[in-house]
Image (tube, rainbow, N blue to C red; front, side):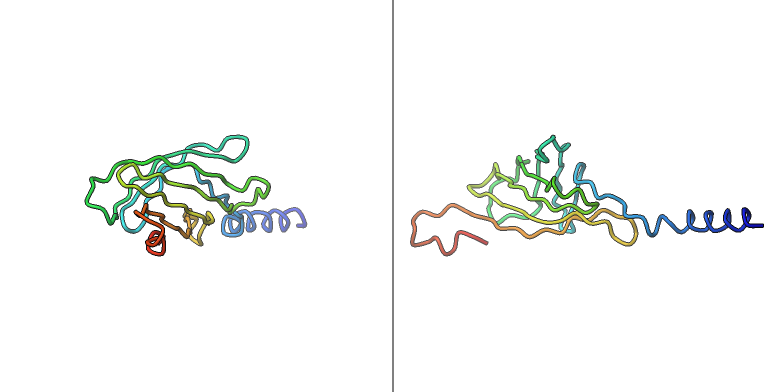
Amino acid sequence: MVHTTLFLVVLSLALVAPGFSARKCVLTGQWVNDLGSNMTIGALNGKGEFTGSSHTAVTATTNEIQLSPLQGSQHRINQKSQPTFGFTVNWRFSDSITVFTGQCFVDEDGKEVLKTMWLLRSRVDNIKDDWKATR
């Protein structure tokens, strides 16, 4: 009887465990945001660095949008299941660079989600216009 009860407890935990287990969020892969912008992040190297590409769906310029390189780093000391990261995109179609910082999460449904903040720096002609160069 003890073995049967123990088996049922273990079986019950195994069936419920996926909801409790912390699935690791992995940056590597393709990502699409709610505006239709997309990016691809390559594999992390031993230092936690990565490269990839980004294609934005939103721009303030009239230039044709082009696929642009990105490079970044994931916090590698903290090997938790939902890591922090940062990356820079050097836009090929405009004279601007955007930096992103954020964290990779696994939501209640098991879906990987990136939550980020960003700053975009555009070139201006003189220092007097510096105030309007960062968004």
